[in-house]
Image 1 (cartoon, rainbow, N blue to C red):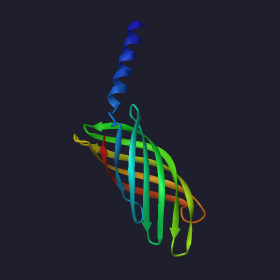
Image 2 (spheres, rainbow, N blue to C red):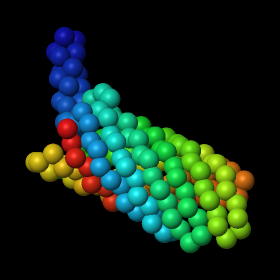
Image 3 (tube, one colour):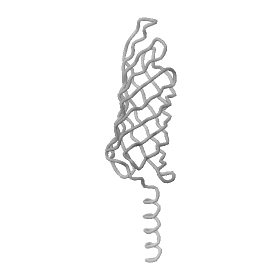
Image 4 (cartoon, rainbow, N blue to C red):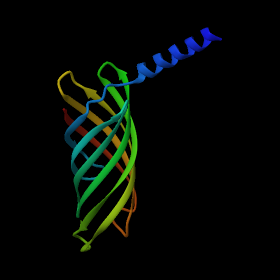
Length: 158
């Protein structure tokens, strides 16, 4: 029984450390992209615990006749794929405001979001990422429904 417990403890420790990824305490940069138009976000990531982090994005969107500002918060889990490649998944939400010039309408919205992506952590303090963020919006007209946001990120780690 003692041998079994020792073996189980060692196996658990090996599995836990093999999937752990060293996350920088802070990362600041840009996230560029959108599903229909152009979007730019100032992105901040904060290490929380082990392989978890919090991402906060403040952004602007421009598509056809609609301009929008939004604040997004996501809780993410990070796993190592191979070498400096990581993948991550997360969930969260946010809020924002929009201005629709064609129908002379403006207002506020909120949304829930998921996030899945790949990142490359360079040996210098730089991370490049590509992620997919589906967002389900709720408001009177502009953000009702599903938005499939794809973006490229570049962040400086410190």
